[in-house]
Every structure is written in structure tokens, then in C-alpha cells.
Length: 114
Image 1 (cartoon, rainbow, N blue to C red):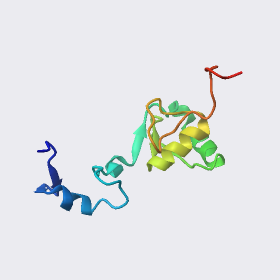
Image 2: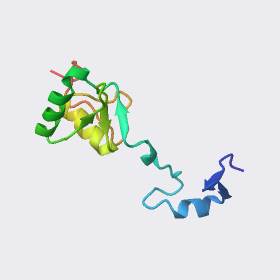
Image 3: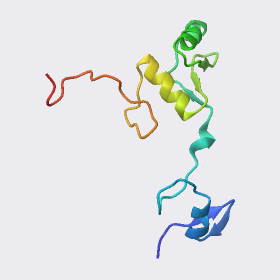
Image 4: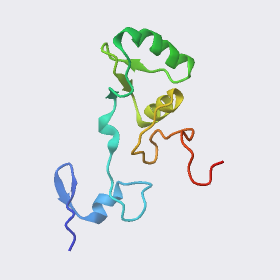
């Protein structure tokens, strides 16, 4: 017997019933909707408050319009927005998964590099 309890709107359901709403997932993969965290603010991708207007304009020039809080935190509207902005300005997620910003260049010589 599995320790996993499947719920839809607080009601306990079978795995079969739960997976019916998980379109496009692999068989047996649990369905988790990460959409509840957007918009997301990021201190790490933020800037000094005095730079907000300048960096906001630069983000438009980079093709990834991004807003910032008055204290300089970046505001990302979606996972794709976060990825595009971070990669455009050279930031990345050290614990990246699919769809997260990843390094665009090697900053070190690894095995097999010349």
C-alpha cells in the first residue's frame, strides 16, 4: 500500500481519479501545479533602489521587460520570464531543473576543456 494520499480540493481521491486531470504528464508522475508562486520577487536578481529605473529600461532593451519593487527586488511574472531575464543578464540557478535559468558559458576549465 502506498503512503501517498491524493486530494482534489481537499477531498481524498484515488490515484486514477487524481491523474485524470494531469494532462501531458508521464504515467505515474504526481501532478503538482507550481503556478501559485507567480508573480515571484527575487532579492538575488534585484538591484540597488537607485538603479531600478535604469535597469528596468535595460531589461526592455534586452527584450525581457522586467519590473522591480521600490527597494530593488526583481519581479518575475512566470518561470519562463525568470529564465529569460536571468540568462539575459548572466544569472543562473545553481540548483536548476528543467525550465530554470542555467549558465550560458563555462566560467572554469573542466575535464576535457582545452
